[in-house]
Image 1 (cartoon, rainbow, N blue to C red):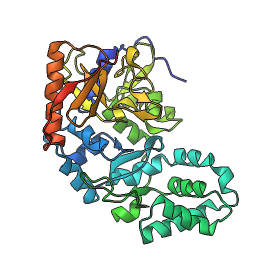
Image 2: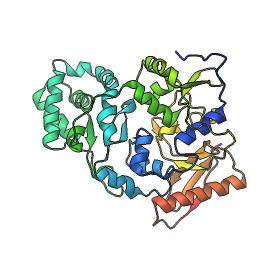
Image 3: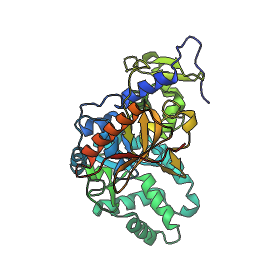
Length: 368
């Protein structure tokens, strides 16, 4: 249940929340930091597909090139694995070895849904056997499923593979995930790939502070949405003496780091092109700080997220690459000045991400 803040806590309006979150997300002004440092600051990048983490950093970092993230991945300083919300994220090596244990309880709940296909399967033995298999040689899910089925022929094959994924921190080995390269998903354990032992799960309190640094000000429910966890209220209460509190417009209590940036609501927010599944849009229970009510639900079709355009800090349309242009589809007609800003930002993104492209930006249908 969402807690309502006391009347003494100051209210942060939607624009104040927007600007604060954009500042934490490195979207108000691009940051001069390495790809690896940005991945750490943002506590990972959503990465169901290969390209989104690269586009996410292009929108956030000054001087970014795809090679920066690709080299960190090839050097095993960052890697791809399932963590928050049972989805693939790109994390630093340190976070691969700590955040995954933190969210293990959610993976255990996920596995419970497959229990009918695992009758008679000793899950500890399965985890040990799967570890031996993928550490001997990285395996595709199909190969892992086949090998596990040989041990438990009466079990459901898909449930066996899900059990291995839930019980073990399986990373996708390169060349999967490298810029300009291709490769099917093959898996080994994080410990084996990173040549380091797993570390104890961090206290939830530590992760609360990191979450607020990247996504705050935020409610308990916001963080639970981001992490895919429950029962984080106690951690926030332990930290309360170290935090400041506000109220959202609906009265929900918001927590924040005392010294974190909370810019003036009128601070200019340049246009930004964000990839599908960007964490900016997935990490709060209430997304009104980024998604205007009139555009709610327009960034998804089924379970597929679209690439999103921010104008003045808020979702204002979609974008997509085409054969002859980067096509922008605004939800409303943009004033000439805004259109010029969007074109300039789109051209900048093309120069960074597709320097060989011989085309520019054009506006498609207004999705009104």
